[in-house]
Image (cartoon, rainbow, N blue to C red; front, side, top):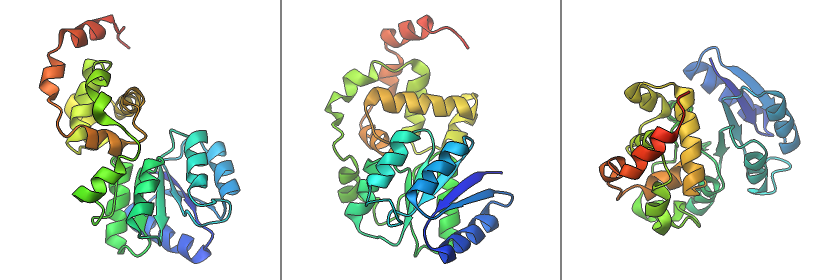
Amino acid sequence: MYQVLVADDHPLFREAIARVIDDGFPGTTLLEASDLDSTLRLVADNDDLDLVLLDIHMPGMQGLSGLVRLRNEFPTVPAVIVSAEEEKSVILQCITYGAVGFITKSSPRKQMIQALRQILDGSVYLPSHIIRAEGAGAAMGRYDPSFLPALLETLTRKQLQVFERMAQGESNKVIAYKLNIAESTVKAHVSAILRKLGATNRVQAILSASDIDFSAYLKAPSVMARDSAVSPR
């Protein structure tokens, strides 16, 4: 069903998370690593990985430097931090540096399964106590949304439609269904949207979209012109 890499230096935790994944996602292929170097090797050797579950305190990580290195070398592979750390500042930093989710090791089994399902569906997961106004602003990191109106002009109509549904919290699978396109196409649009907006991750893009009137942009003549210039695939 899926291929997931569990990167943690504690064998007991790797065994525990393996049971959680087996319960929630039967048939999933699990790979294991105990340090950053072996993690990077396995990611390089398995180009069909769906997810990397990463402990920020295992050997070689050097804090969040390991996360940054993983995201730089393999930007298309989703990385989720699974850690005993519960400090807001650390959790938000992980999202700012490119993680698509943060799951605390103290989370109940059902909550972990729900979090993993949400992430595998293409959404971002954060602990509930982080999703508040004071935390949301910090999650923006160094991202400056003041340039957003001009940047939105660079999006095609289909990218705007995908972005609108992203802002509503829909997963890639749901967006694909509602727009009648392939999920792989949605993923490509999401990557293009983040690149054009200069956003580090999906959270930043979604938070920046809170006041956007998408209907105004979708009616813009410039969007029509750009779409007509794009050759159909």
